Length: 146
Image 1 (tube, helix red, strand yellow):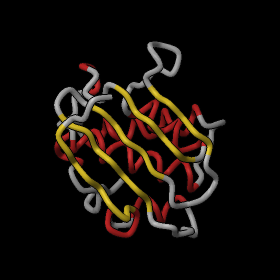
Image 2 (tube, helix red, strand yellow):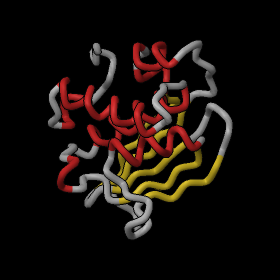
Image 3 (cartoon, helix red, strand yellow):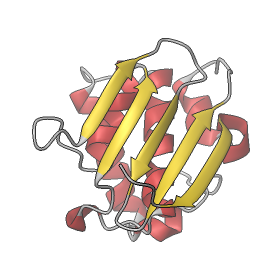
């Protein structure tokens, strides 16, 4: 898989093989198939991980609030190691449009992502797109009180 259009992916500390393995885990957890929602969630999750400086094993992303579809929330849960059953690490509010948003919290900063209101033709198009084609905005801010 080619990650050249994925901004901040190098900040995750993961090899391309590890990233591909995590993406495959998302596919398997999503009833063994990709769709556009899952692909957008994967892209957003890796962008968050990269913005926060990424070590998945050290819980770089401590919590996320998502106003999105369930496919995207599943991807963020897997990529960012956010167990929904442990300490309410991910809060999900179902929203079935393409312009969903999320806020993810690290130890010192938060990342706010809003997607474009754009319908991609396929999940492959999502993986190949530049971040600017997927995300309407990505804001990295000092941590606010949660």
